[in-house]
Image (cartoon, rainbow, N blue to C red; front, side):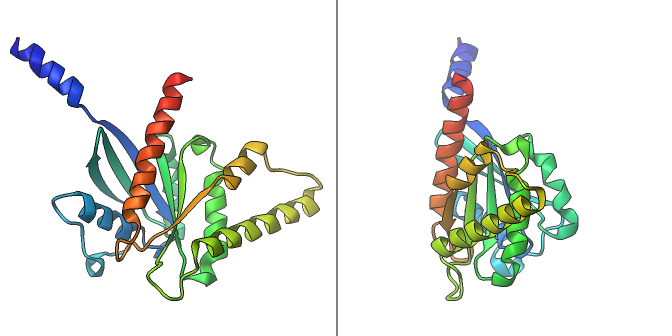
Length: 215
């Protein structure tokens, strides 16, 4: 009877685990975001910002929410190690792409990398959140400016491809994904709206799993 009750308790209290990858250019604030999430949700705080070094490979963190465990994978963003990202696509349940909203000079590079992420077939149906980080800086672009900048960059790319190849190369599914893209402003350093971003992830991975089970 004890084992039966224990098994029933474990079944009723079990938490489903979801993997979330955090990607973006180097120095965008990905590790600062992960450490802030750990500080906000765990008993043991994450590293302070002045102790964070550039990521070579990956950093991990796990938080427990009602009925759910989110496992975060913070992947290095330097040019030479971005090729490891696709190895995580098959097993992830959500993608967070972090943009440095203060670094206008690297925005085009950031959009080029982001566009490659959007092109990956493994994550076509995976929830994707674009975070405009460093909103604590007076020089940071707003969410509206970030979205507008990406839309302008993307339109230039589409028009360039049309001139070169004479036809539309973008699929309807991809257009819909771009049109419905969620962009949020955060400060990973100060923690501003980090909880809102985690709430977004919690809701989306749950909804995504329910759609998978009903299909």
